[in-house]
Image 1 (cartoon, helix red, strand yellow):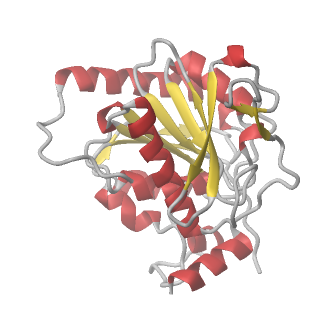
Image 2 (spheres, rainbow, N blue to C red):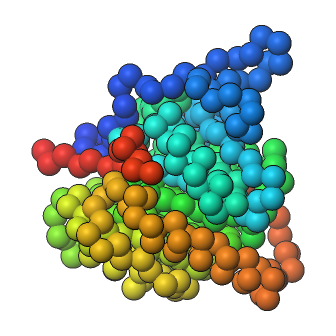
Length: 294
């Protein structure tokens, strides 16, 4: 059944840029991976991670010297990492956070084919890298999912019980619900966020445009209603699906959320751990989501 679901997803949910907008090479002197167009002084590290399905996905870690948290960013389904560079530089500077992002299997320089389950394996590999290579704890991590990226984001968020926070940006209730206003979750549906949001223990910030003509505002409002730990949502008046970053209230509200998470970490320290952590400007290039009716 899982394979059938993944096949349905691949037919209408994944649109990797072709050709990829960047390349990854190995520096002969240092042996380190190099991301095309990004110079060493930008303080970004490149990883190639092997997932549970055997694919090798590219991940980039943008380090801030005084970071309070790390943002694990899952992008939309019609973009790759090469198109996100400017946005990550701006978010790192304005929010004072590290940013870890990655390309799904079959996107950019990542191998394999895109599928719902591969996005889950992809984000699990990236999370494990954050733990092993950077020592990032759940309490220091904020998951950020944009449009289809809300799928892998909520997959992880529903499993990490001490996560600091979650940001859902133009998120979907589920794949089928983008196309049709179904009331029940169908077995062949994909990215069943409507069910997973109920299992998220951390604070959830929902950001959605009121004029989103790809994923209706009702998706964002319903996800916010279902969240157990709600943070003040941001309904961007007049905002579409792929232009929310151009509104001044976007970065202002995100900064407010980050500050609130910092205060929360100081006033409400995490409970004693009993078990090991599970191993699991207009941004014109930020093509976040397309869905095709068949």
